[in-house]
Length: 71
Image: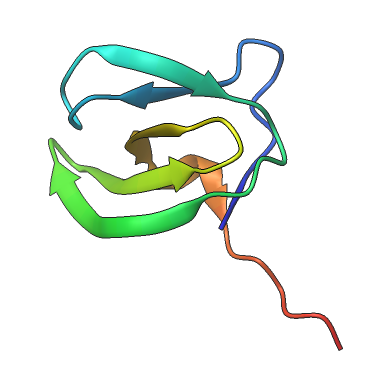
């Protein structure tokens, strides 16, 4: 999956869906989905890993878009 347009602040990556922020991802960053979706308080969350940044955690599904395969 890829991070959607999230602005200059980036997409918050959390330790748990309702946990503290452990980092940020930029728009367009590619991530590997490790787990999810999991619903917490009406929001869907995925546990992802951005290997380029060595960053792993939970992000809101609303800010992820599926990658389209190359022809």
